Image (cartoon, rainbow, N blue to C red; front, side, top):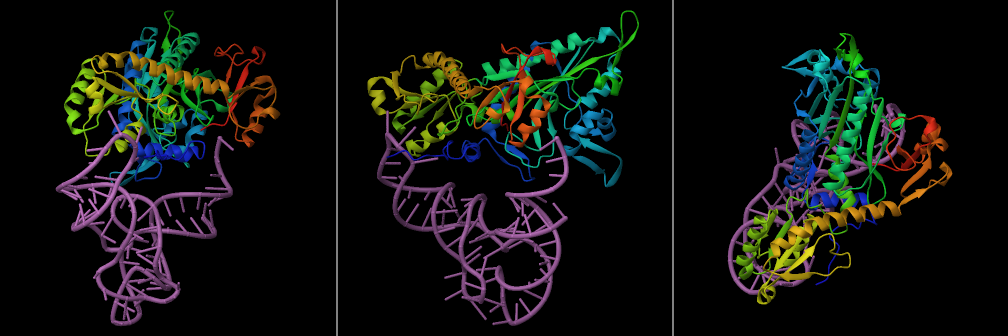
Length: 469
RNA sequence: CGGGGUGUGGCGCAGCUUGGUUAGCGUGCCUGCUUUGGGAGCAGGAGGUCGCCGGUUCGAAUCCGGCCACCCCGACCA
């Protein structure tokens, strides 16, 4: 039997491929209200892995988790001018409650700088209360005109960190620390290489003095912002009176930060690694790391034993003993779901004391199925999983490098990929011009690649320019 | 807000122009048998107030009026 394409080919219609793979891998579907999303077990399990990994890193860097309310007095948003201006078009407002019109409307949080700032102003009295390092896992609502599952939905899940510090230096250091934590998450958990840089003033978070970003390149070469960290200066401190007494008993404003990663990274995960046959999940976030497919009913017992061996070796393993479903359908289904390693155990294997196994990252990349001795197969996987992670990362990195072009001026920017151009040749006038062609400056970096902390004209930065999601 | 389109089993659609038996098809689902090393075959079966309200008519998925929801384009927004 021949292999028919199970999905629209990425090269034919990438957005269509994206929709189909989410549906067929059973990750998510649209909610009943426009722009909302139902995250199904397979998609949510991926999110839980990301949460666990990131939460650990957030705690390891000294932060404590908290929970602030979904509903915020409208007046709070109004207190910071740029913040209101930036968010008002996408804010959902609650005007009625308990059968009555509310005296003051409540907004559904688009982000929590304001409510948390209000609390910080009460919680912080002395320099001894600093730094205050908070994080919360929450949902937020930003009304969207053109929703897309995971990438842009009206409600999404994220983590938002909020910190207050005595000095600018400490706050900037914190912002960059979390920027690097995100980089670590992208590399080690999601196997996604990103470009780390600072946003231009135009692309900055409303209310921030500096916004740092991680930009990933998707398989269609468009950019996706995978996470952001903001140095908020004293903007929110001024608006909410977040101040403290120094050892000399002087009143001083705090410098605050905020930083977030959302369910959007799942969209990035899909579009970075997925191929024409479905998802390809890095082992760290794969809900099932190895599936054991019993080909015939008579090989179910040995398949179950192998599954147990894998579990004993610390691997998230699952037995597929559904032998009344044709083999091909089951194989295709597990490939769609992106399971990194698949074992196939049939009578032929059993006779030879071996098991067939397929690496999802290599399947369809010119590699044939392999067989390995059944004895010790569990331990073999322990060694293979990190190799799969590395292979996915390297493939993504190679693709980004092949699609990144150095240019000198705007006129050369045409077609696919990332363009590196001298920021001095672009400027904010250039950004406006680029916007007409649907390009944007994704971030600014030093020529050697480091993240610029200050955006001064004399430090000769490179702009990364791309079409973006 | 303006223009266009669509609402019919879980999903995707036909039927409507020209009203008339038990409203079809594909897929999915259930049961059984045969299959099973790359999306199986046959047989049987369950599942629908045809978006909502009203009108015309002996009779409405079909014609008329109103309403609602969703989609696309434009506008707004960035």
